[in-house]
Image (cartoon, rainbow, N blue to C red):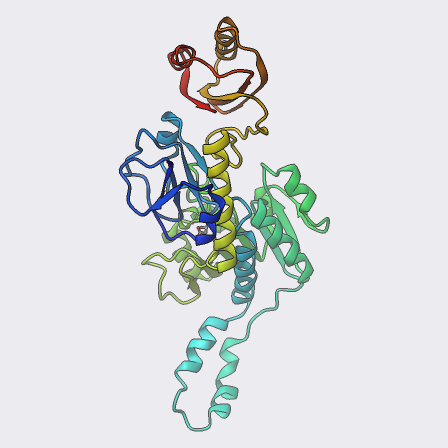
Length: 385
Ligand code: MLT
C-alpha cells in the first residue's frame, strides 16, 4: 500500500483526500510520495519507489528539481492556495511601509509605568508621522495568483498600480483589475513609491534587487518582499536603507544583518501561516498526489507538463520520456506490434521532458512493459490497472 512521508507538519485535512489503505509517516526509507512545506530536501535521498513530491506552498526552491526530473519524480506545488493569506500580509505591510507603526508600537512599550501616559503619547507621537498609501504608486512585480490579488486590492485602496510580468497567464490577465496598468520592469522600478515582489527564486531572479536596482528606484521608495530572501541582496538593501535612498524594507525572510536595523521590518515567514491557507495548501497538494499515484494525472507540476484525462479504459500506461524526435512513434509502434488498440493518447512536453498517458483496450503484457521501459529516451514507465 502506498506510503506518504510528511517532512513537515501538514494539516490533517490532507489525509482525507487519500483513498483507504494509504499510510502516513514522519520517517520512511523508501516512500511512494512526499509532502512537505519548507523542509530542505536538497541533501535528501530520493528512493526508487518515490513517484512524486508535493509542496504545500508555492515556492519549490527547497526541492532538488533537476535530480527529481532525472529520476522521473514529479514535483507539485499549490499555486494560489495560500494567495489570500499572503495578499493580506502584503496589504498590512503597505501600511507598515507608509507609516512608522512598528517603531511607534515599540516606543509605546517603553512608556510602561510612566506617569501621565496620554500626555507622553501626545508629546512623543510627532516622531512617528507617516504617509498614506492612497494616491501613491505601487509596482507589483510578478502577476501570479498573489500578485494579481495584491494589485486588485491596492487599486481598491486608492493606489495607482503598475504590474509587470513577462509570463502573465491568460487566467492572470482575466483576473487583473482593468485599472492596473502594465509596464516594463525598468519603468516600474523608476516610478513606484512602493514595490512588492512576487516571483519565484531562480538563477534569473537571484539578487534581482541589488545596488544597481536600488539606484534606479525612486528616492524614499518602500520595498516589500514576501517571496524569497535571496531575491534581495541583503548588503545592498542595508546600504540603501541606511543612506535613506530606500525609506523602508519589509521582508518575510529575516537575515542576521537586517534584524534590529532602523527602517527594516523583518517578519518571521508568516505569509502563508494561517489555518485557512495551511488547509487549502494541504488539500490541494494531497489531491495532486492522489490523482498522480492513482491515475497518472499531472496537475500543477513544476518539472513535468500538466497532462490529465478521466480513466475510461482497461489499462493505462504512463510514460516519462525525453522531449526528442522519434520517441512517440517508437512507443506507439511497440504497442501496436503487441496487437493492442490505443483508445486515447495524450502527450505533452515541458522543456526537455515529456509525459505520455496511453489508455489501452487491454492490459499490456510484462514483455511489452519491459520493452517500453528499455527504449531509448524513456525514463520511467508505470502501468495502472
Ligand atoms: C510559499 O512558498 O508558498 C510561501 O513561502 C509560504 C510557505 O510555504 O510558508
